[in-house]
Image (cartoon, rainbow, N blue to C red; front, side):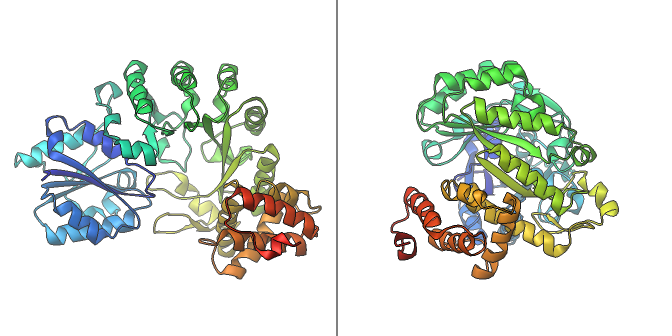
Length: 484
């Protein structure tokens, strides 16, 4: 039996609830009375509720994110119906802003806005003592990292073998990007490296291999960043990969020298570009030099061994389809290993909605709160952009078409954006969907497109696809690709 249950629905099994592990670590004397339960999105909320109630809890804390609102709503309704005496506590970024109007708020007894590491324990003590606070919505100040118990012991050995291990060296962000919740509360707080090092040492010794730092801008602090990276450089072994997020504007020469020394395969850098258009960048609170961003990406590609994951956003205020196409083509020319095409969202609490009247923006009122249309992009175009993003994810980001993609780019005429756009126009009518397409079916559609619409020779296409499919582990090669 556990008096306190911490629960959430993770987006995928390989993700782990980092925030809930912090709450568990900071429960103090109540830690022995608490249990952590994690579910993925395929888990039936009724079954999740049954598992939670089997512990006979008095407090259930649920972490809410953009991807699990529907599952959380069903879970809360079931818990309220079956165990009305249990206190339900919500937290997480999805309910931390515009809280009073959130549809989940009426289902909860308490909502903690912002970082709940310390206040959740105080709330549990009060509830278990029969003295719950009168306020339903709690807004604690951000804690000093020095006050926090660290959560890393609460990754099980099974977690470390099968999931990402989330780490952090700092919290907060100094930038004001209007589409990002990190811009709401400015300021950066750093953890003491002397506390982090032994924790990270133990994680590696226990088998952590897929490591992801959640710091919003890892390359802000050279001293701390150098300590962290030197630590992993000295312990780099095959199979270990460390993901960090950087901003091009902070890539100083000292940082470049540090990244030049990264062992092959160790670092995966997420580089936030979003757009090369300086006017749009400035008006969304993210002023940056396009030339500086391009130079940073070129440096990373040509002078380091890091894997580069570069971000672009489609649907920004004032951005036409042609402007996004130019961004995409410019990014393709820089050859990052992955290009993430994100669709603009109006996350709760962010300032991006201030442009709605000027640009006639209409948003999806349900998660993921993505743009539906504006004055420059009608609904049909936005829908096609979303399909484009999905098609590109399969074609360009999964590493399955390393031979075929350069061949596609070599076809004369169309730009890379135009090629992928036209392929997407062929792909969706063919399958009626862009999720769950078998690899061989996708490859055949790509073959047909390259031969029939790009004018490439069938034997060349087939040879490239044979190499890619064999490397991707396709169990057998179909006749159409073997015999051409």
